[in-house]
Image (cartoon, rainbow, N blue to C red; front, side):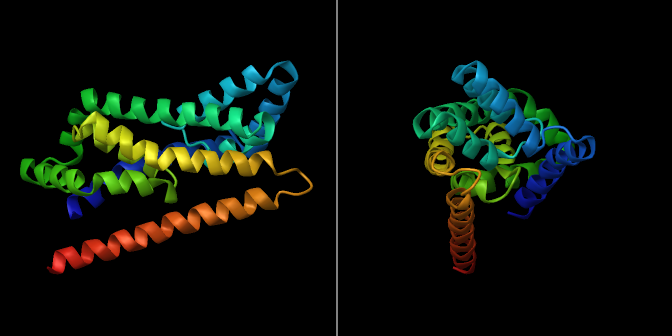
Length: 219
């Protein structure tokens, strides 16, 4: 488990560099995203949907405020269309991360974890805990992309990965997009309370997961 955590932290740090770069350059701020979606809505809802999908896909490479983008999708497109657009973006990002890492990630892993035995330990640990980690990954920024890449690197069966990713993404997207659809600039409380609720539930899930893991280790 230690090697798995170490690998997650290293890959997470690599992704975090993109977040820092975005912050320093002032690219992809929430205000910019709002502006793009507002302009796109004047042209066509299709353009809004395409921007949402593109932003959530780009999140695989450059840190994008996922929850905010999903809520804005609901705000500009309504609950149903907003959910569809956001979920499409998240699924495309997850599948892309898995596929890219499955075919090219082994070389990166060999660099990150040079010892063959430790690589085996990391792979075994992810095979054991990866499903739950993917499900709860949205509690922490960047972690969803990291777990998608690890699923590909460790060659987790695709059906298992997509099931865990869907269990994570579908309710998250539905709830976030719906809260955005019933929020307004004058009354953003539904979106705020939803964000707090989602984070709280996911962190509770992590707490229970860690507690169960510690008990199994003692046994």
